[in-house]
Length: 467
Image (cartoon, rainbow, N blue to C red; front, side, top):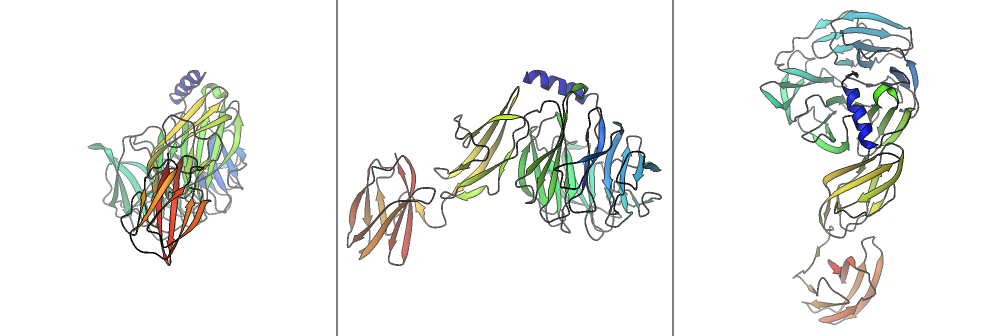
């Protein structure tokens, strides 16, 4: 059944054209507009609750629509067609409220910083709701435009381009004078030129880019807070070519939306998923404002922190989509299922890098997603070593039942504590004027523990392993 679904989706890709910009933030905090499937075709949706629910305001749009954006003016929405015609609605995009305003408009459509301001890629700008456009000089621009965006304040803007001479390199061009002049700000290595999306964030100088870097099944979300000079990788998300994908930044700090549209052949199954984040894309709430027919399965997960100390629990966020009957987690990708919960917590038993795999099982399809070298487990902030030459030695390590603790200094008193990786005390004792002594901890189960020795005002931690 899974192979049949995949075949029909691939057939769809050849006959259906989706818009370039599929989601736009509205002028209000909780308001977004997006293009997605209806029961028979494409439609324009409006949501006023962050994408949890949505109303299809116009179900008559054809596949020739390429981009949408909402103005800063309440109720004003634009779209541009494949024929480069710009349409405007002053009534929230409701059916029969559209009027054509201009021709020769590029598909990269961006709303401006002020009411009535709109950009056609980086080359044209209008300040009167698209009635008239004037050209920007664009000195320094080259190649072919993949996507463009403006910043929230000032005259800052961006354009992602590529050159046919270097097809595996993406250049981020930056302008601080409203696209009169541009310069190379950053470069990306990429082999999927069409799968790049750009959006502004909440702060001035904050921009996001999503792209596939040599991995057809992972979309990476990158964030810059210094006008594109440096980028941090937020996380990678599962992506298959039978989904249509787009991103947009919200009107609150840390807010970003991802949209996943799914349609299979003849519109038998059609779905819209909105991924909503308030922590810069580190985790998401998943909303499903439109559903028709059976749901495909797509596994997705993340963690807030990816580098943690060995004694710290790792909490996994699950934002998989589809009609899922079972989850299987493999926290070190060794082929053994470690958990079946939807949102598990895991304690790693040793330091190092760990790849994580999540498998999601539906009624008639399955999907698995692996994040390579995703979790980095490091030693605790205090000293945790197998053999510490200073003050004390712990032997043997690993051990079976008995551990010998040897003091290299004369001590009047020291206390011994053993904790499991959940931070729970499993053993404690006090010793006086001993250079060496043994403790029997045969009742402990196999695993990694933290041995804590307190000597007056000094404390030393040791990682010990029970066989």
